[in-house]
Amino acid sequence: DLNSKAVSMADASGATAALIKNNGNLTITDGTEGKAGKLSFNSTTPSANNGYACNTISNYGTITIEAGTIENTTVGGACYALDNYAGSTATINGGKLTAEKTAVRIFNWTNGDAAKATLNVNGGEIYSKDGYAINVNSGNAPAVALNITGGIIPTDDTDYNLAVYVVNKGTAENFTASVTGGTFNGYYALNGVTSATMAKGAVSITDGTFEG
Image 1 (spheres, rainbow, N blue to C red):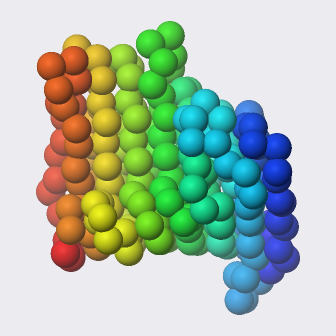
Image 2 (cartoon, rainbow, N blue to C red):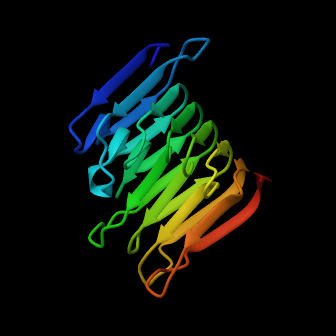
């Protein structure tokens, strides 16, 4: 329970870093009326290498976010408010996740990653100031499942203006997305990249509000 308190971390290592590294079962909530609790991370020397991510939360286990603000104020680099890896499950029911670049990433890219990563968005807000609100990097199956039933997913990025951006490699449809609700604010609500070596994935959209 954040209890309307603020917890912050500043890092200058230029290497992998995180305010919280979750390998277990973690629930983040705020029982106060104002729900002003905040987790904040900043790297002064971020690396652009995806292998050296600087995160507010690095999730390898199971995390549920009910309330509070989770922010990453780092400018540049591979830095996320919530970064999810192979075998992880993240459920966002409330609160606000925000970053200068991508707010939430699912990174299950390495061929040897055998466990699926799952992101469930049922509420809250996922906001990107200058990037993708949600970025999916999906490797070989079983890779990534994205389920969105609610929440607000905006971006103020002026270059790509993508609410959700997917890169899916491999030879199988190893990325699945189910959108049954939520409000998306971006020039593109959901966009992906494919090539001769990248699979298309399976996407189902049955409801939601899409604002350009």
